[in-house]
Image 1 (cartoon, helix red, strand yellow):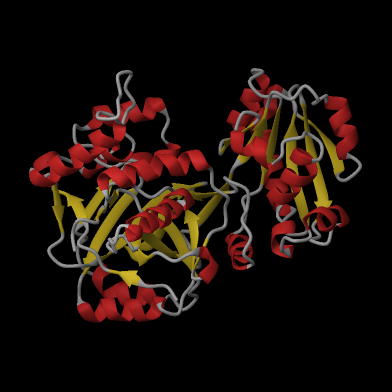
Image 2 (cartoon, helix red, strand yellow):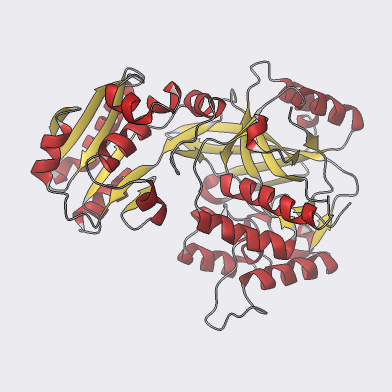
Length: 441
């Protein structure tokens, strides 16, 4: 099954370049242009220059975001701004954070993990990917030959084997500790004791791993491995991963809501009539003066409908909100007729019902249109979704419940993939805490 690979990880030399909080970023795919510039200004050695460098007007084949990233990486290693661990190791990582008024801590193991084709059932995806994002990550990997951020994955261990092995290390002072954005606290320990490493490798040799966040980076790593193997280079057979137990009390998933635009066929009364043929449609008074409190209450009610119902909130503007419910049944006649090749786990998902029975069947947004990204966009912020409809930027917002992690792994185990951005694992892992440099044998 899964193979854990200790690495001579690369870390910042903070004695030379300053605070870790000013050097790390979230993953590239949640950083917009304004945030990108903010990270550029934080510190001249911020990892943004490696992971998600700026695009310039005069970029060329010889001078672009990828060549500049490679140049910075090489230079920073030479200048001792970045340093390799002396011995191969795995890294115990804690991320303490607040959500919904609660303080939680998530524990993970940062390590190299041997790349496996999905068909083997050892490393399993749960989401679809987009070609454009993979092309970008492939260019970065080709130029830098390094992983700057880990793929976030989960595994199933109710006995907390890794946590028990690592407990001894947590008694020691962390090698790295700092407070970052959103009041998150980060702690890192290095595990290079051969006995502990062997125990962890033996444990994962009987485990499947489920990709939670970072599908584009993992599939890019597979692609690059094939490229290099064709050239006789076998060094690229693993990638950097953060592994979290799916029973960890700090494992949190947020929903990702859907926004649609550019649909001349979307007429409010017509859509509601069409929806009523498949769903129970409940109209909710939604005055602007009480919007925030009402929204929170309706999202709480939506969550209470799990797992009995597929449940979605629809906002079309104005002062009405619509609750759409459908008895959760993977044998729904329409779904079985048109999507019978998919597993029952896939057919029962809220996001499947939304994408098939509403986006595709009623609004004409099929998989090709979704991949294009012109009619469908995403946000984690429900309030933002409503505001974008009010401002006329979008025609409708569909608000969803978070997908339970058990449904994520059930779909992956069945060999199916959820639509892109079905899950939002929170908080995001930091980029730049540990880097994997393939130039080290």
